[in-house]
Amino acid sequence: MSPEELLSYKIKAEVEEAEVYYRLYELSKEMTWSEELPKIFYQLYQENLEHAEKLIELYKKIFPGEEPIQVNLPSIKAVLTEETLKDFLERARLESLFEILMKNEKMAREICEHVSTTAENPEVRELARWLAEREEEHCNRLKMIKKLSDTKRGVSNQ
Image 1 (cartoon, rainbow, N blue to C red):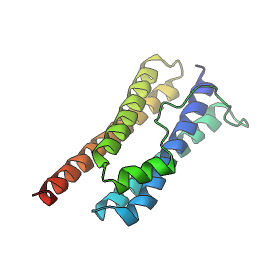
Image 2 (image 1 turned 45 degrees about the vertical axis):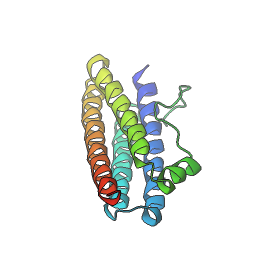
Image 3 (image 1 turned 45 degrees about the horizontal axis):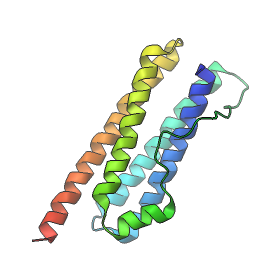
Image 4 (image 1 turned 30 degrees about the horizontal axis):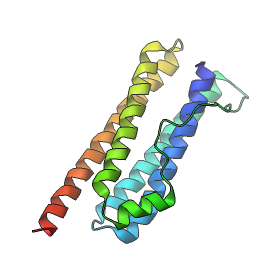
C-alpha cells in the first residue's frame, strides 16, 4: 500500500471502530451490571476518534489539499451490527464480545507494528508505532474489563 492508501484505510478503520464502541456505550448504559462498562466504552470511542483525527492531520500534512481516498480492502475489524451487539449484552455474553474486541485490537496492533517497520515515510512509521501502542492499551483495557466481568459473574452465580 502507498502511504496515501494506508492512511486513508486507517482513518476509515478508526472511525468504524469508534462507531462500534459508541454503539456499545449506548447499549451498555441500559443493559449491563456495571456502571463502569459504559464509561470505558465511551472512553474507547473517544480515543478512536482522536486516533482518526491524528491520522487526518498527518494525511493533510503529507498530501495537502487532498481528501483521503477510497481503498478497496475489507475492514480488519469484525463488523458487529446493532442487533449483534445488543444480543451480546442482553444475553450477558460479554466474554464472547470481549474476545472479539480483543482480537480486533490485536490484529490492528500487528498491522500497525508491521507498518512501523516497513513504511518508507518516517512520519508514517512513527504514527504507526504510536497507533500500535494505543491498540495494545485498548486490548489490555478490554482484558481488564473481561476479568471484572468474569469475577462479577462468578460472584453472582454463587
